[in-house]
Image (tube, rainbow, N blue to C red):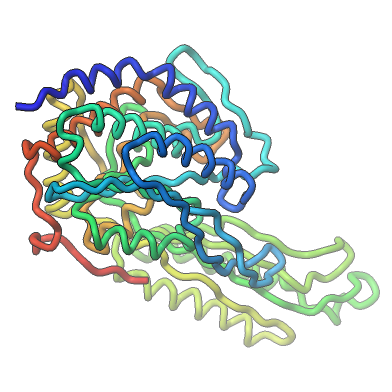
Length: 419
């Protein structure tokens, strides 16, 4: 019987190093569209993961279309993804995935890490997901220190665009889902006490661009056609869709428009996020948005266009996922850790991977909270606990103590996705 204790104990001694890594990486601004920061993060991660007994590669991603705040369609360049791959003769292939980007752009004031107390730090991306990156690294280092290191094939895929829906890395994710048997993703826990995500909602992002007619607000007000007024009518109708579809939420998250205050505005833009529990609601909701947009086109001097789609399907709690959670709970029991899970409204790349046929657990990252805000925090001891949990899971998988059938052998797992 393989002895995993020495590898697990080694992880227990890595907390100071893991904290240093998280703080260093979180002090690098890697907002989804900040290419210099993403390049700096890729350099850091390439150096860190190149110390593993594996092949590393930096992958250029294609640009993707996006709508600017003034309603123009442009091609947004992507950052690079980082791939790390270790091949073995073992029968099981595991994908470990997380993103390097954050929601904090370089112009936001929230840029540096600070200590809250001896066990807690606050900073941009400390939990989502720089902490997860450190956990993957140390868990794999521990696996490679064990005597089962060459009995498991694994790959790490770190993408630079998850926070905006992974538009540049979607093909990489699809390919990774096809060649692996299960996935481990390192988003943070869904609560500070360490809950894992079970079922997740799906998500769609949409943009409405309204064009009107500019005019002097004093001399020729009635010659103008206000894009803002037309968009305001649409926003009210979009918000009224809430409550009409079970489990769905429709959020108008951003509005941009107008120039000078004494000019009738000829351009206005709003961005909408929709969350759904049932994929069947996706075409219905999209049709409602198209109908509301077309109403504006029937008004004199006004035009409107709808852009976007549902980019992330719901992730139900499948039998395959329950099987994975059962194995993870057994590892947690061996370590004295509680493994519990609950449904959440958040989405991640685990939604896509599951729908493409790759069963996965997607919240193996650290305990923390208040993500996507300037209160984001990370509970430092959880870096060790989560790394030990992943390392034990991987070592048991490599040794054969944990049995897993590939998804191709499991008729119980869904294999379709709506794009």
